[in-house]
Amino acid sequence: MSLDINITVIDREGTEHEFAVPTEMNLNLMEVCKGYDLPVAGICGGMAMCASCQVYILTEEHFGERNDDEQAMLDEAYHVEENSRLGCQIPITAELNGLKVKIAPEEQ
Amino acid sequence: MIKTDIIIIGAGPVGLFAVFEAGLMKLRCHLIDAIPQPGGQLSEIYPKKPIYDIPGYPSVLAGELVDKLMDQAAPFKPGFTLGERADSIEKQDDGSFIVTTSKGTQHHAPVVMIAGGLGSFEPRKPLISNIGDFEEKGVRYIVKDPDQFEGKDMVISGGGDSALDWAIYFAEKGSFVHLVHRSDRYRAHKDSVSRAQELAAAGKMKLHTFAEVKELNGDDDLTAVVIHTKEANTTVDTELWFPLFGLSPKLGPIGDWGLDIEKNAIVVDTFDYQTNRPGVFAIGDVNTYPGKLKLILCGFHEATLAVQTAYKIINPDKKFTLKYTTVQGVQGFEDEQPKQTITS
Image (cartoon, rainbow over all chains, first blue to last red; front, side, top):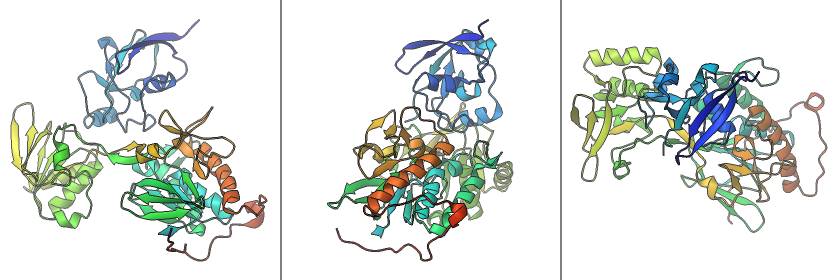
């Protein structure tokens, strides 16, 4: 039985990329984007200490909840919208099947 | 001019370990780093976070690893040019290099090793269209020589340690500080937040929450900033605004050094981690090659192999045989690095 889920990532040029992502590999969305060579920097490596993996969640039901570190980082980041999250703080779980996100603009 | 055997660009973990490995081969090193303290990302981004994949350490705090690497490198008396970014490299007729920093400090060596990680840390600049007009004319991204600003009224933006620490520092030195933050939660240490609230209660600071500086006014020098909140826009007369939103790494000038670059990293040969320019090496997170993993562990290995070829470049007629530290011990240099002036 496959444990993959389907997610769609829209890059900064507006191109949609659809992936089947395994849920049992303990991955987060930032790692998935990097793994597929999408332009997500993930500078801090996934500690919510930079905002270089910021994405906009387009499928509202998948927004989840920002954690405290993530919220504090987003309070200082640029291009932040209501539906902003840090990709590194989104673990890939079965509930995210059908998730669609857009990568936020680069900071500079 | 600073003269050495190996100029190491980047004083992060990999650059520091290269000093040790080079030292074992009697090679001297001098490190250049854009931030004022050694340690690179470990010091700048996550000093208090544990690392679990350093062999022999089930867990070590990033800041602690930097301290230990500094201790390990200490016998080899490395030189440091800190707070200056390596801007240019010029090849000399004899094949050696002169590396010049953003402040004009020159370094001369036969070998250059780039251990620049993700690049040099540059301030994150707020997105205000005319901000460039006021840089160094009232807008400052880094607090340098704080004495000159003591007692002056100012606006500071940010919610992290840097913003809070400086706001407290200046408020305690007699400045009236407007601290502007986009939220009412601060990333800074809890003690700093309480101290800032005390100073605000004492009338020495004003905390603007859910607020953001969005406009800058002034003819030549900054004269006022406009703080936007949902309810109102407030103009605050000030000659000083410090937007302290932390630093983010940029590959920067190294990208124009004639090195092969792929996806923001320097392409190297895995035989010795040399770049397409003979005598210039790239080790650690800054390089790329088939199978590259951005791990401190791998950077240590790369540094060790790179100094072997560096040795051959510096000592073309001498043969080197690997000696084990357990057998030989660590024989450091007794004297400080000679700072010799050369004319090219």
